Image (cartoon, rainbow over all chains, first blue to last red; front, side, top):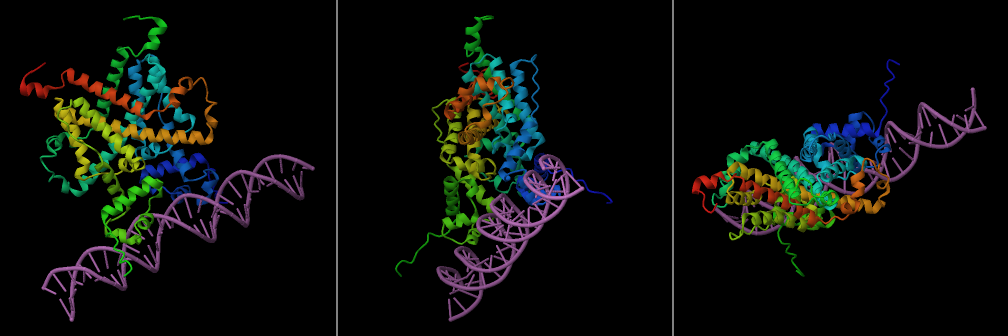
Amino acid sequence: MVSDTPRPALTRDRIVQAAVALIEREGADALSMRRVAAELDVAVMSLYNHVPNKTALLEGVAEHVVAGLELERDPAVSWQEGARALVRAFRKVAHDYPRCMTIVFTHKVDTAVGLRPMERALALADAAGFDGGTAVRIMRALLAYAIGAQMREVGMEKMLGHLAETGAKSWNHLDPEEFRHVIAYGPELAAHVPETDFEFGLDLLIAALEALARTGAERTRAAGAGSGTG
Amino acid sequence: MVSDTPRPALTRDRIVQAAVALIEREGADALSMRRVAAELDVAVMSLYNHVPNKTALLEGVAEHVVAGLELERDPAVSWQEGARALVRAFRKVAHDYPRCMTIVFTHKVDTAVGLRPMERALALADAAGFDGGTAVRIMRALLAYAIGAQMREVGMEKMLGHLAETGAKSWNHLDPEEFRHVIAYGPELAAHVPETDFEFGLDLLIAALEALARTGAERTRAAGAGSGTG
DNA sequence: AAGCGCGGACGTACGGTGTACGTCTCACGT
DNA sequence: ACGTGAGACGTACACCGTACGTCCGCGCTT
């Protein structure tokens, strides 16, 4: 009676949060049902009252992360800046939950929260005057870049970490003929500033979209309202 | 003496190939040291004479897949088409080893074969007249797109497969206000033609690079040789 | 108030996994 | 002929996901 230890009620949400915390603290490989249960000071099988299996838990983790996307819609801003903000929002959650990202990318998120970013992207493309098929393809291209940029970055960091450990042993004696450019651009390659790389590629895509909009992919808008500013 | 059963000598290469075959046949989750050993009709621990641990085996798988990249250099072709060919080569191996791709993207490839595509991309950017820093960023943007396009595609297919199973139960009653565009563009979203989506994004990036080259990022070439045909 | 039903926490148990360690066999250099 | 070293192998251990049965306590019905 010193304290009736009112544990805060086991819940799917608490389980998912514990899983996320564990992954961020010790990496995705460290996640196991037993570890999560220990984290919550609960028996392993109790988890299964709230989560059908481990895969579902991982899907919950993915959803939790995606839900962290900040998608405030500011109607005053241009679609270009809106698109930039959307892709950057992806980048921000990737920064907040770096070790969860592989899980996000390798599991489905079939709830409404997963659709929200898609809706946002389609709305932007629509606002820019692109027709439906083009809007979908734009959304997919931006998503592909957002995903790939993050994956590439973590891969790169794994690489650099590995190189730091081994002291770049087998790296220096590359065939200087075949790998001429890799060697020549060594400094640029080593100077890995994710932010710059990310923004560079994003600028490329946005610029391409602007050009596309200018060259007449905005049939929808034009047909509806006539050519305005020409 | 009926047959001295001359098993073809256990080798790191044979182990990796068996692993790749197993993954492509039954999925990455089915891969275990025991299964690989069974595949080769060998005791489990014999594998460890050629591979230090499972992670190293997966890295071997990743390297094997990357080694399948077809990078013929045709000096007659423009850098634009060269870049297209390079990114498409990524796509081709993704098509040849679909179930291995997640492994490729989540493991380091620190041998020369991993550098080869990078060298190729840098050579192309150099040929287009971009300076070193820009060349590196271009290479990274293209790589990010190649990776992300593939990841997104498999994710999408997992999604569609799931939808086909469940019959899109909880999909129809979305808030029609919030998800206006998703609902309106339903047909375009359902019609998932990976090839078209992929080429669309690739065209965007190449177009952006052409524009970038035109607007004067080719300082290197200009300074070195004077303005020739320009 | 008494009885009942049920959801949820828990323990046990099984088959599978990665791999450390020790043993045995056999081809080869001396 | 003999040592030697590489490599195939078996055993063993800690850990994993999860099927199944038990049991307790809360909330409803009577």
